[in-house]
Length: 250
Image (cartoon, rainbow, N blue to C red; front, side, top):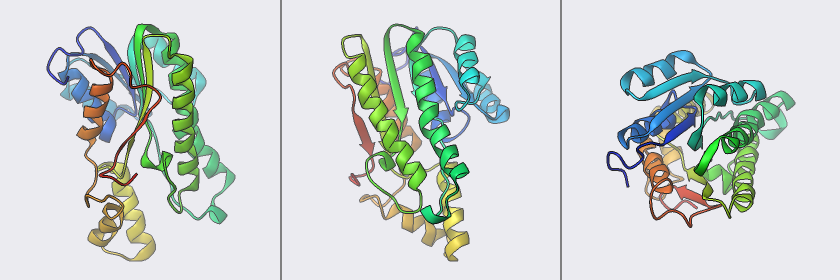
């Protein structure tokens, strides 16, 4: 499943590919023989990933902008696998959440997946895989991140609906729902907890890992392994699923 050559001849497009989970997805699919295109807003992280992994092509794009997404897929060419990984999170009580913050969270976390999936589906060469990297926030609630939770629930709904539309084709659509990941985004969450509560880093980290029955953060390579499985033999019947990687949290 993850052996070299398992994805030979396939082109994979990964949004949010410059850091964290996206960068690890690029590594994993290159190792499996795929041609990989990574996209993101910031040029420097994308180029750093591409420099580390021959076979990775970097394209700067904004998933919240329809024209930018169209240009991304035109530059990438026909695709076989699309992984909508771009995302962002902000925390605040709902009463202090502005409409601008609400719209920004939905734009990147939900509308970005819609635009990415729509463009990717139109360029698939028959067989295809559409994967959204959602979150356990798409399966349950978390306090103080209502826009993020609402957006991720929307991603799971979008995934399930589109899966039914393409079910008679050799295309599947699934969501991977990790818990708190060992990434830069979680580091920002830890810093935010420290700033607002006065807790130490260890205490802030413990507050996050406590949500995972295994008492740890999820590793990005666990998401990559799940994505490779969904693109490999034996996964054909897995469609419209929200697959949690959370140590038993949900």
